[in-house]
Length: 315
Length: 101
Image (tube, rainbow over all chains, first blue to last red; front, side):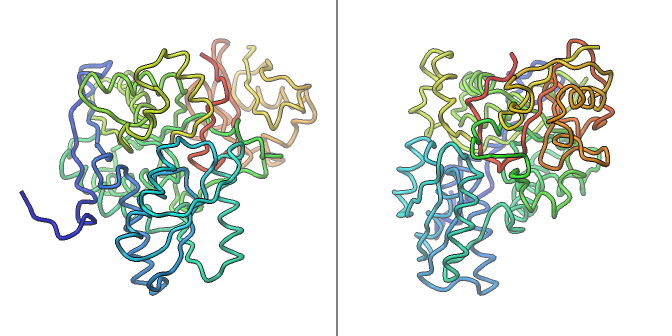
């Protein structure tokens, strides 16, 4: 065992586990990277630390300063933990319909929560945070959707870890949120083997965004555009809530208790496995299942869970 | 070739409130063009004047985003379903939408 001087040193170096037992094609291996093993419980610890340390080295943060960030949960939780250890104050703009565990975890780490309308999803949170940041120039706005330190955390951490543990990778599959994981890992992996295919998985987004008056109110993360995301990705698939829950449950067959977005990513990986003759697919499990227990995702009737999940943000 | 197209809420008012419509065409572009001629309000909403896809629109044939297939030239057959979804900030998960299947 190694002795660590700070919990922050535990971020990254997550395990990669062979779950080919769940693959619909025995010649298509599926390996899953368990990002829930990060100290605050999700892949977002990586970007929380990377964005905050980049801002520190750019001298954009001063001791005790307030940071503001729009988040549907995990980024806020990671940032709140890092802020607590480093002596900053975090205010998060959170859509009102995230699972109660996310809200509680933010409170555990001392973050202040400002609610944005649930009906506007993350779009509403982003807009409100941008307005608040404009009104409070004394606050630091690291803005995960536009911060190059987000994909950089994956280019320098997640990507190299995958390549180190699995140089035989043929396909990389991850959920598309800010696009940081896909861009950072995707660029690193393609630099080492241009034949690696990068596949994005999207939940069906948009419909709940009743605040969307017209299509011009849409949003593409600036880092996706700035980093040439459209050229980097080889494909993008949509995965439905029911499939996401079904695959989240199937993960428990191999002893993995992961969040619902991990089930969505795995559903995408399974479709990928069906479509290829042979290969090695690496899929990212963004977080553990703990924050979603209140959805009954594992234990209640599937129809009931699907219906209930329709009111909660799970990515 | 008649294909089912799922419309997002923001576009339904242009199609008389319909959630699902059908249109003819052998490619995604042909289907969307046929749709716009049937419902003129949709004209310019999904396909720009220069014949490209609107920046904030994602079009899927079954599960796949056509931008990573052959874009508007992506072929479709009778059994395919086309879904139009607005591009929104990641994490804005819409679980309230009942997608096909």
